[in-house]
Length: 146
Image (cartoon, rainbow, N blue to C red; front, top):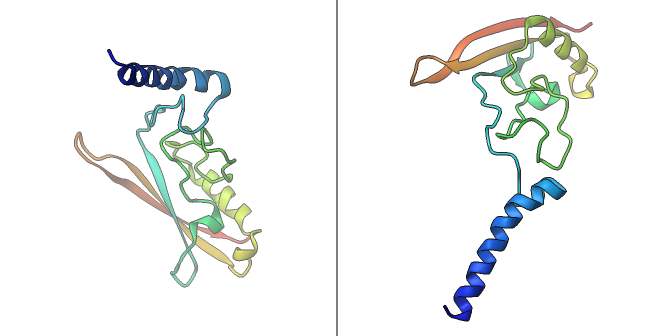
């Protein structure tokens, strides 16, 4: 075996060793991670839409109802602290009371100060049959400014 082949084998061995050692010693350091994608095996989730009284859809970010899930458990391996969105745990289906409490708290956001109420639509996404995923049910609630 020539020197070039030996160097290549050593480089590959070091990369494989780093894949194991780096996450164990220092945590997630790009491009090494201990978190396999979708390790929490989600089976359902929700989409949320917020509408003004005149029917226009409002930005999800203003109401903290956007999805921040990237395939890893929420907040894991992203390097930043994600905002406190409604879906704090991916796959969690919030009940009406939780949604209302969350939306009521968001009326304090300066972007939301001119609204007297909003309509919130929760789309529950899950398995429709053994081959398809889609909207299983949708709920709509009107939330008034406190």
